[in-house]
Image (spheres, rainbow, N blue to C red):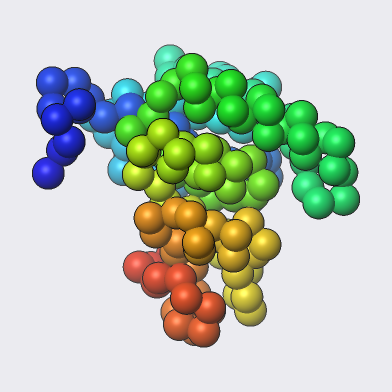
Length: 157
């Protein structure tokens, strides 16, 4: 059931992924966003032509080995989430997706983190951090999901 605030409009979805395989997996989920007001966020400006006419928001790529850039990425993601005001955030990783989920939960958005299919032995750091925050954390591997507290609903690829 849709909440009262979105009954009279399409739900606004913020779909977040860094580049490479994370982005490729997010693009495979596009059909699931049909009928929604979708905004995409990523690190690669060339993605604009792939998602057009949907809006694309850019944030700096970062990880634990680039702490200053991670702070810049978090500040940028805060601005994106505040501008978009999503009802739902979906991310396939990595750090930017976790940050979007963390911020959006503070604003009452529903959130889901879908860990990369490349993580066949354990959840990624971003997925593990999302376990305590996101409404759903999915692994694309049943054994990983069972062992680490995520859910398995199939694979994206």
